[in-house]
Length: 402
Ligand SMILES: [Zn+2]
Image 1: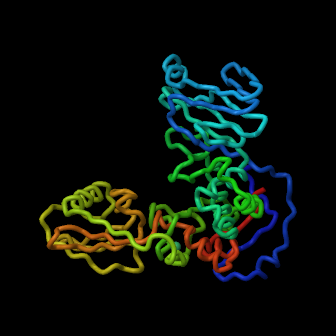
Image 2 (image 1 turned 180 degrees about the vertical axis):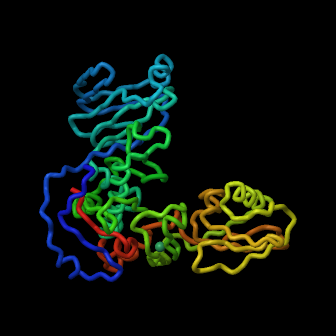
Image 3 (image 1 turned 45 degrees about the vertical axis):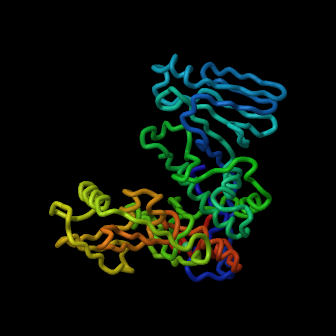
């Protein structure tokens, strides 16, 4: 599953035409199976209730297998189990796996395809629930959560490729948890931190079609290596590179793609306020964390002047008394959070009479990679998913992984 084979190889450039793709001669390499992905769908649960028809339960401690004919509801008391075995399960341990003859297992009212694993949490006083399923089924369920199943097919297909690339990279690197490392029983979480995954009822004809029509396709670096592929809800006019937001250079992201196709969709602007006191605490934090290059100690009761936004740099420049400060915009979001800073695309103004900062921004999410509302707009205008992906990922190639 870790090897990328090439059924066809398409180089994406900013200038695309249909002919570019038609000229490619496919490499006929077969025999690489579609991998299974493990996604954590429940975390630190004291009790887990699994139900289904003709359930098969495997207890991994002792390898005991039991089949339950008809409808069955199985309860796992993870709190009491963990208490008795606290020392035994210092590390996350796979307790049980459940699957059904029907292919569907219900956990906390949600229906999942594939196998459901019950794993002890690191503190062993609760359980995590992990869904193990075909990668393509996972992608189909995810599309309705990350986008909307009623969106045009080409937008869903672009999302399918982006989400598959993201998931496959996570699976390959297996660095889901900094504390658990390779011992983690899952590849990624179902959360905004990673990708929000759906369940069986989120899968529709349209999400299935978007998945099958792009089966196995992933975005890779020019050298054919897997790399993290990012996406966000709305750029609000500006697409950022990973280094501009997280400080790390990611292979493949070497150009500045054009955003702004999302302008007519979603919320136009967002406005927030920050008090002088909170801003001062923020600057002191940023200095302590060495996020701003400043040797002099920052103190309060200073005159403030904000300089005009530089289009080249994604930073706020201001005078704090005599000190000239340059603060990268993503640092604000890291400190104040996603509620106060829904995106990294904003400008700042100082209101001297109110002694407060006014923040005015657009967009939603980190702003790196594909803008989902932009993809919607382009698909509505008739763009193909390949053309959409080429716009947001100009430094990448599209390849078939299996
Ligand atoms: Zn956008």
